[in-house]
Picture (cartoon, rainbow, N blue to C red):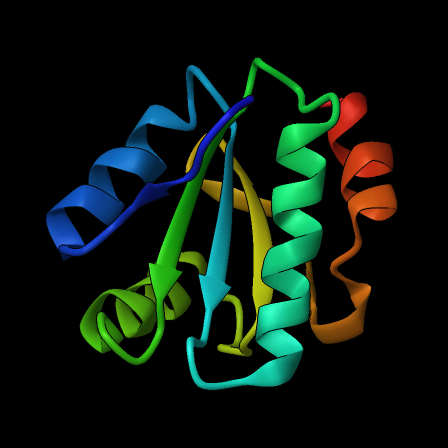
Length: 115
C-alpha cells in the first residue's frame, strides 16, 4: 500500500513539486473539519489500498493545520483553492485536478493508471 506524505512546510511543498519532473505528484488537500473532505479522504485511502500507480508520489496537505502550505500550493500551482481537492502535478505544473465529490477511488484509478 502506498501512503501519503504530509507536507507541513512550504519548503517540503516546493521539493515535492520540483521532484514532479522525475516522479509525478498527486497532492491531496484535506480539511479535517469537513465531512465531505472526510469522505474524499476515504476514497483516496481506498485507491491507495487497492492498486495505486507506484510511479506516483502521494502527498497530503491539511488545509486548516497547515494553512500556509495550502495557500502556497494554490499560488505555486495556479489552481484555485478548494477543499477537498486533488491535483496531479507533472514537471512542476498541474495537469489534472478535481474537488469535492469528484474525488473517487474509481476516478483516481482511471486518471492515474495512464500517468
